[in-house]
Length: 102
Image 1 (cartoon, rainbow, N blue to C red):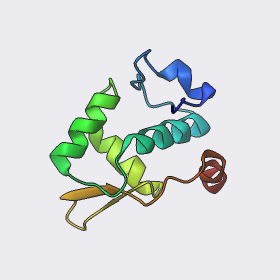
Image 2: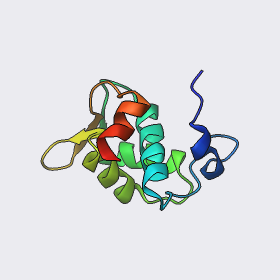
Image 3: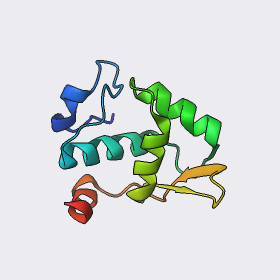
Image 4: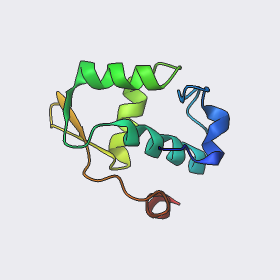
């Protein structure tokens, strides 16, 4: 079973929902990696579907920011029009992902 990185746990409810998007860069990366891991590989989501999933996984209900951050960190791809979204391939190992952006 998946276990969230220990540094991220203060930002998670007991049910695993993100309570806030951390301000510190490393912790924000952990949160984005955590959210990307919840997306089904190979599945395309419409914008309303991805918004609903992100709202289910984050209490602060800001799917536009989360979509943008996931896309900017290459964890989420989208069509040019932004009508379809999908996880960007296999989720990289956490240390590899952090190494790209720290």
